[in-house]
Length: 377
Image (cartoon, rainbow, N blue to C red; front, side, top):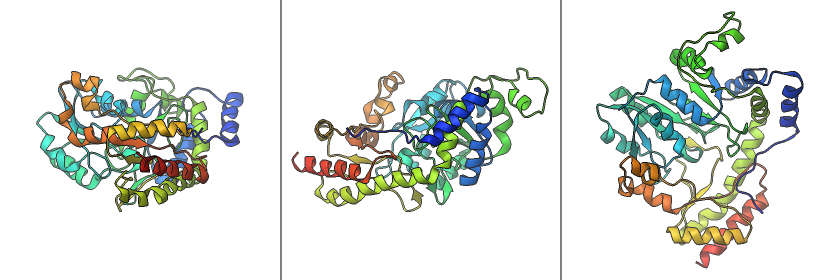
């Protein structure tokens, strides 16, 4: 059986997790959290970030930090996970769903300005499949209209736009280290600050509204309640796991990109048959091998391909049900025709298995099986 995803865990991860169990504090902001920050500074030049319990909570923190309130509007792609929208719905803000580009399946920046009203407060972008959005255009629009841009870079750790790391391209960036991502801590994430404006308040929000982190840093001798907040910081056990993963950054990246390239080398020539479309990565974007998806002719072909691949012991997934036409999207007043490209692609996209420990032979088997099945459908 070729699984859909699998975390790349070695003795190094075990060593650091055991070190916390044996010698360190199990709660957050212990020995390994600053070591993770050091790795992100060395790899990406990120000087200010905070680990969180998930990308979901990182997005929730971002929504608090930009003071989203009832009746504020947020422009967001419909082709994303529910966390992106839930983060600001919990603050009372309203999603204004934007359709996606036909190439990258990221938010269509040419449609954003038409959705802006006097209630618009922010744009939440999603770097789908580890390929960045068109941030030069998006940031220009935001600056023109006085809007925040929050980058959901859950899938994009190690990806780049114009040689700038994803997660650092807007006001606030959010990462995921869920077990399905490239670099994992089981459940976890991070929020990245591209100015000093939000850092002090973010530290308080992350610690249940208290200044506990200042106590840990030796800046004050006791902590008190200063603001709203929640328990957004992860255990140092999880930080130890992530630290080992980041030390193996180049190894994991190389292995994942190898699988991505193996798929592409086999499937791209088959694209001429009209049976599928391969991913499109713009020249100014560098992907991170997070995901390889194909677009099929229709939903029936996708369903048949999934069934036939299961017979070959290969697990593939459909990706997202568009938010605008989901049950919650319907409750918010949207209908399937609100985002036609999203609706169309949501019916036809298929994610292939991809993980660091997947061999070249595994990837060749998956790609060859897809070509064989589609020829006969």
